[in-house]
Length: 119
Figure: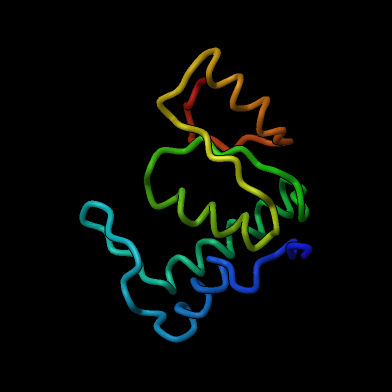
């Protein structure tokens, strides 16, 4: 039996269903900040537009993400999923040889990192 290239329900599908049904429900708490489904939907849409227009991202292009565990990571993941871009998650605590290996293995055409991040 051949596997489908896309599962019948993805995490993005689940997120978007919740965003439509309960937009003001909290999704993420980070320190004193609370982000609703609506907040994440809006931010991820904005990021997806920027990634597409400014960076030329298209479906299928793998993107390595080198971001700390913070809200931007979530809307970046959602934006890439909306664009159909696989995301290679890089551990921000890894440096030097291990980071170079992870980047090479990801075969990513682009790396998204937080400002000031140096590998």
